[in-house]
Length: 161
Image 1 (cartoon, rainbow, N blue to C red):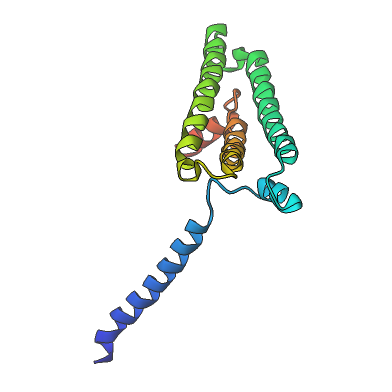
Image 2: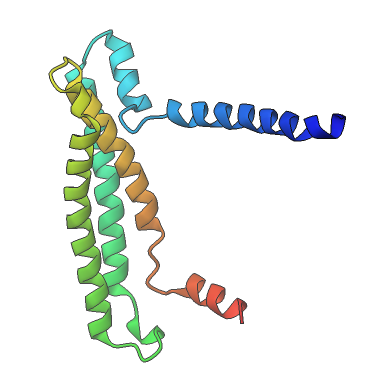
């Protein structure tokens, strides 16, 4: 008789773990940011001066990473690529520039969508800013993963052969 209950017990345990995991994953939000929260906590209200500093810092970090990567791509010795040609480097550069333009539009629209439920409240600007900062952090990671030398990619491809 006990062997028939075992699947139910295991199922109940797994269900409890799943519920707990999903509860934890829903607690994080793209429209919450610790730096923005710190500005609000500091003054007890919306502190536009503090929020402006946080925004400028985030945008500077993003722009610096973008400019550094653009310079890295622009000055990369394309002859290191197999049958490397200058045109390929220019294509990579233009693709990177275009991807950033598209990403900026995406961020704007995404944050508009994510913050719609907060429209009309006093803290709406802080909600949008939180979203923009959080997406900028993700974009920084994406920019860091672009390597014109492709050395990591080639190692991965050839190690599987």
